[in-house]
Length: 192
Image (cartoon, rainbow, N blue to C red; front, side, top):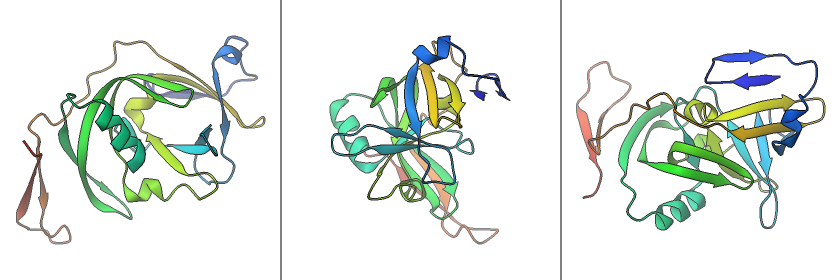
């Protein structure tokens, strides 16, 4: 089947189109009950979670997030806040990548942030979690899933992409006690 997030369509295909066989090929990770892709790593394969309930871009595991931010010291950051079942309110930094590579997978013009604890729990010691692709990231890919063969074919799409609404203030406000209908707000402000 073909996942066209930008067109908001999923369609069944009788076979993988010949053209798609030239795209980047990734294995489906069979050890999960959600859609995950395997990417080669230096010592073992890692997994990328496909999360259509996540309206963001790319969430990176702690090691990848640290490496990416260290390699981009002048890239502006902001804060993001969202609710994630299992993690509660997640507050973290978010930035923008002109080009982001995850093994053989490349994305263009995508928001990037650190992953939540819930996302990171997707992996295992045998295939550690590497990243999550949310809807904004998926809009930047053409993707065909061949479940029978256990393969996914992807290629980066070229923009223009729909505008991504992001927090430009570097501050977010969250309820002090999310369980109460009325609660004081707590300000979280990005350093600097």
